[in-house]
Length: 538
Image (tube, rainbow, N blue to C red; front, side, top):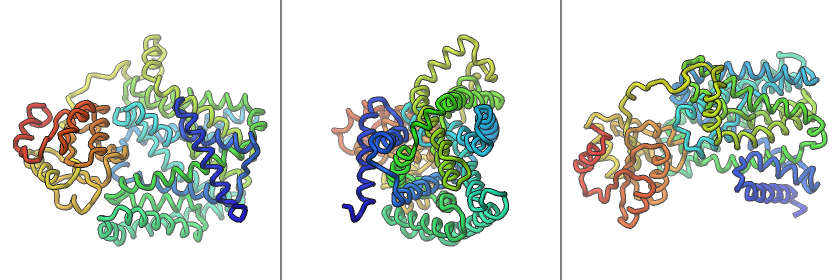
């Protein structure tokens, strides 16, 4: 084992991460927090683990793959769906929070360079934590959940810009925005041109050719990511941004949701290494020496940043409840805060004590946020009764809603039954979204298409299941049907499931299935009549 120290180090990291996750599970502590605590225990606590060069390589690869996944979520359709409110609020919130956070750091006695990076660290919220908290609360499809996700998408774009600027400073020796920064932007421009050309002339036919094999799509997507990682290295651009551009290119293809689902577990492993290493590299003595500053900054992130988001959303016309819940959801610092400060520390722009300070703020805000977000509705009601939310503006309660436009119908599984259902719903004048893991089966259908598996929350967002009038599954996969019935029950969306096995009927009913297709031989007309009786189609 001594001949391969990386195996020993990775083994220690994975075992410690698994043990901390297991111990923290009853408390519902976010994985990021558990990983950092594992690093603190292994490094400063027990002294059995030190961050080696090989572990740093794994950590950097994890960051690159995280940016790749973030890019995969940047489809043009998703950006359009973000809406004006999310774009305006996202840009304004990041700007205001960075300025105020930096001012607080200066007031606490830190130098200008440290204040700049602490302001940036405070500005961004954690995509990983927010998605998990919203999913746990069943609020991914709620208005405040959609707004929070939209603001996070805007933040992700701004993070890419921030990484470019920091990379330019590091390569340029920190003296000016010339040299390294100019080279960084030129390199990104070259990668963007290459990606745009590849999307148009290469990727679509290549991925369509391999669409029948999800394993081949997964390997090809990773190969594409590493092509851009290597190209970024050659162009003296941060490998993280190369991976981000690669992900954005793939996001324009109809396979992006399925690719997200397959790449995420790999990313989770590498990120576990990164956050355990981050915790192991922290200096608790130095961090506790800055406890007062850490508590001040944490209070700003937990209270000030949500208030900024809520006020901005209120000024955009959203009601107080939606504004408040969206703000509280974003009340923590991001995994990118650690990445930015670690990059700056490695480049000599800031001292290691700043990294320890940001790590302590991360532990406090992520931990507290995981407790506050589930309590936010009750907290909002209490503050509303006391008149404390008047500062938010907007309506004190949600305004009377105009009748929602007629929703669409989501049909999952393009077997014979699924294709018949899509065609029949289209004949009835319904807007249909067809879902399958095989893009080839979706060709030629009179419907919008989404490629991927229904056990992925990303796919449910892509198909906009939360606002669907009806979801129909023609699948003959027990686990997928059960999960879909449960998710739709959480969102309050009527769901019809193909009960290909009659023994599954009681379970599907219990999970919330509104209608069961006992057999495809029931006939499309009978199914349509049943849906009309349920009031989900005309």
